Picture 1: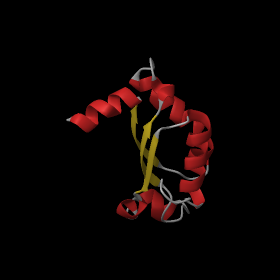
Picture 2: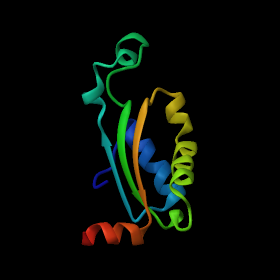
Picture 3: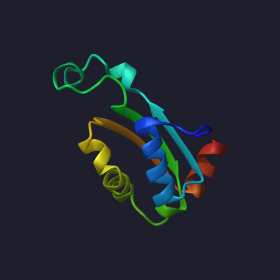
Picture 4: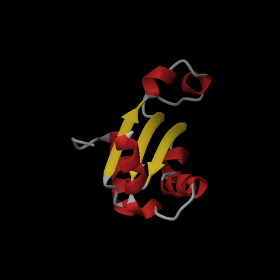
Amino acid sequence: MEQQATGRAGRIERILRENLAPVELQIKDDSARHAHHVHMRDNGVQAGESHYNVLVVSPAFDGVGRVQRSRMVHDLLAAEFAGGMHALSLVLRTPAEQARMDVA
């Protein structure tokens, strides 16, 4: 992320940077598109900071399968899920995989 994020996005950024040393990291709060969901209205979850789209490009994913990459990130962010984060859309690539995407 280009500027220092605050709140949940900032915590997500810090955790992922400290643990995965990404060469690229994008975090997008997509909560506004999900404000109509029942859990947002009925369970006391504040609108916002509940749904994220995240791209992580990291050498930490070299030799690691897709499911295990997702588990790694979910384990790192377990406290955020326990604290009200509802959904996380992940794109997890190695630098070589990202380079192939940039060529396409």
